[in-house]
Length: 101
Image 1 (cartoon, rainbow, N blue to C red):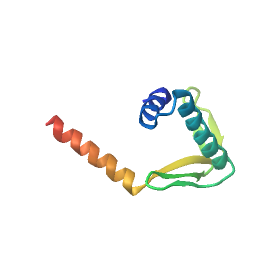
Image 2: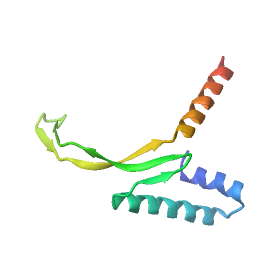
Image 3: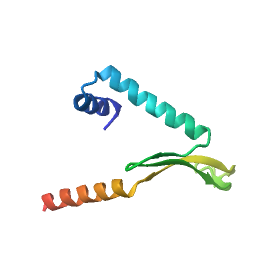
Image 4: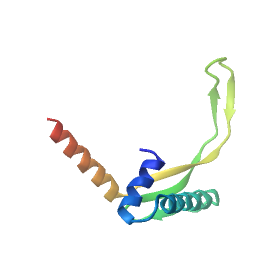
């Protein structure tokens, strides 16, 4: 699924135009991106939490040349699904597996 598919599905379900729906999706993504960049944690109840995780500095290796490359410590975006989302996904997968048998 890509953004265009998501826009189509949401537009059908809400009665908004595809242009309005795309604008809303873009705005949500922009706010989440901006707040993460500011170091904030975003919690969407019954969906999940967006946050930043610390990655330690480490030493990597260029696979082509074998040269050792230092990789600095940094913060990376992280998503943790809610228990409700996890349960729903697992239940749906189990249902699909049962139908396949």
